[in-house]
Image 1 (cartoon, rainbow, N blue to C red):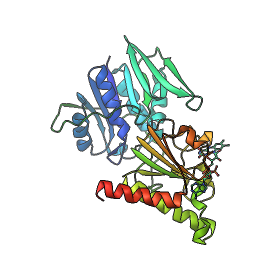
Image 2 (cartoon, rainbow, N blue to C red; image 1 turned 90 degrees about the vertical axis):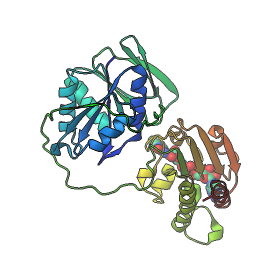
Image 3 (cartoon, helix red, strand yellow; image 1 turned 180 degrees about the vertical axis):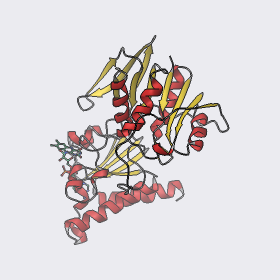
Image 4 (cartoon, protein in one colour; image 1 turned 30 degrees about the horizontal axis):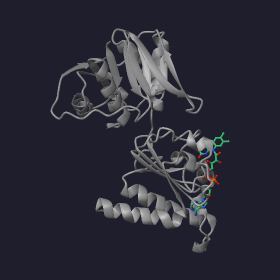
Length: 328
Ligand SMILES: Cc1cc2nc3c(=O)[nH]c(=O)nc-3n(C[C@H](O)[C@H](O)[C@H](O)COP(=O)(O)OP(=O)(O)OC[C@H]3O[C@@H](n4cnc5c(N)ncnc54)[C@H](O)[C@@H]3O)c2cc1C
């Protein structure tokens, strides 16, 4: 089995799931890291240190920004003579190029995969369906097979500083009719997809009459408490759709069916009732902690630890306790 792993990055910042994919590939045998962009020397070094046996670079000014036409054409050209299996992190960029390259190569893509095994040359993937209620096992007989992996579903390999290997340069294929004029930040802080800890706020953050503030100002105070705890734990800030729809926090923080799917080690839900559309976004969380005034709230059914109480009282107490414990 010849496996390639596409290392997805933005301006040199690698999407963590790329290294997880590399770790998985190494369990199947030798693995090559494939990196596109410009000025990729440091990324090649990191790829070797995370276990790549070989690095394939398309390092060219025309690949400075992700453009699906050029990226997919370059991957198609290279993969036509190369691997049996191409693993990619499940980002929208990687999904787009995998779909285009698979179409050009008359192959297929298995997306959002959370488990992968080999049966001889056959790849058998496990992925959640019906909002995570069932896991299906699927296979594809095409070659090369493209598979996108859900972030944090596979362990990240340990880095081996100083490890190196052979680098091969790939020619750029295709031409892009579009170009990027610039970027504006849409979300700041720790990325929800990669976060080991997520602290989320729901509509409950706007419920504290004792502050004597209007709804939005109260919600701002509530999210300040959420942010403070997330900051102490080095985590990301999440939200329910109700909090997003009410304008308390941008959509980029929404967790759930129509937001982001997260798989942290620890998920803290404050003032969130636990509607099914929210729960489907946190099924991959290892430990869920719920803070809610209502002991009957459905979130307690999925929580390992539940606190029946007011988030405005409990969050500051939890933050103070963690600060003390972590020496911050
Ligand atoms: C097609 C569709 C897609 C959807 N997609 C999503 C999605 O992606 N993500 C998502 O989250 N929702 C989604 N929803 C909405 C979902 O159904 C719920 O309406 C939403 O999750 C409710 O958000 P909430 O729990 O913050 O608010 P509520 O249901 O209003 O719950 C607020 C909770 O806060 C508690 N509370 C109040 N005050 C306090 C306090 N001071 N301290 C502690 N607890 C307090 C209350 O007891 C209550 O349980 C979707 C709905 C549809 C129809």
